[in-house]
Length: 488
Ligand code: ATP
Image (tube, rainbow, N blue to C red; front, side, top):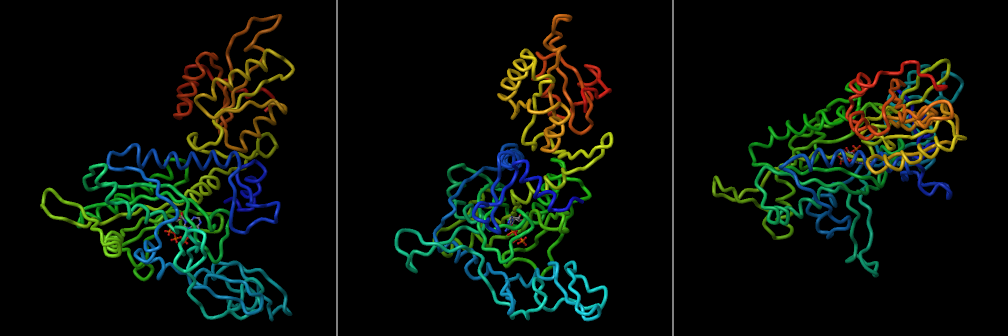
């Protein structure tokens, strides 16, 4: 498993993710997606939207606002319950979530080795004296305070006057925007149960201990579904959504061995939940939540009906009765999913004595789909043809043209950002004094480094097949060039 520092450094070096406000020293908990990062994350969101909204007849989309009526958060329980237990170090003043403190690496001054300082992995005891952590994990010296509950919502003021009546909150989840629009969507779209409403958008949580790169930040994006069902069918639908969502990540390349389901214990369940299963990924810091799939019962609709005075019900034609649907909520994080796809795609290998770093992204997720590379940049015909090709390909796929290094280096650069296919234009393509142009180009596969040569005119059709994973079919039709020549 790759360590997080390698991912952070690759992300910065190759324009995936930068620290926010870096020139001012950075903020600890916010990150900016660079040119390749925004493509990757958009592709993740697009794949999710296509699979959960576009391809399903029982789903519709929504984009609700981040600022909502403050009563929403009273009704939802966030004002009273959306808290984490916090402890402070009396010496260095650092704050920790008391329920996650044992996951932190801790500093220990060991009596058994004359007070030597050790950094010990979270949850483990000192090898020398057997002691377990009781003091502050960061400074290793301070006593910790008793836990206090800390509300994670960001407070702000609506309008020009900073007074109590103007207090509102940045939403800590997108779900509530869906619940308060339940009736609007139901009536305007004439929906029948079961149906779902999906939304992608920013959420904000004033996390006590953000960290692990983009895994836990204070501003992040969620991809949430609220799927409304007839009470009594909720358990079956819950299981269907757990299975569906669990299968989604491997479909886009996550290794099956790196993902698992974890059932919430009864005492761990949120106040609204009947059952929750988390989809966890084996991140560099260990198994951690990627997505939660909860049965929220009729809690939210009933709360909002009570607090707003507006009925949030469904008229069931069959039983001729009004019912309050139950809701199944698959709630995923766009940033966590993007990070998992990055971590899972990272591979280092040796090719003829040299290290090759590859991000083997699924073609749908890769930020750049095709790089067009001229084999000789001093040959005008090669350069012109390659540039024109990249212009043509761009209309359908995100493509780039690059001639700023030798072909071997250009391939490595594209491997490192996960570009599935490179197309090279060479002398044979454009012809010279000795031979006529054959108008064929070479396509190289990122993972296997195999090459095929195809007529330029067929490139769009061939690419369509390659993006759909049909390399062997294309290779069979065109004959693979196995020598991997061209200075790789
Ligand atoms: P955790 O236990 O890790 O704090 P949670 O159980 O509070 O997470 P949910 O409320 O279930 O998280 O949120 C649904 C999803 O939103 C999570 O599975 C995760 O992908 C994403 N998410 C939640 N909090 C954050 C955060 N601070 N930074 C990035 N993504 C987040």
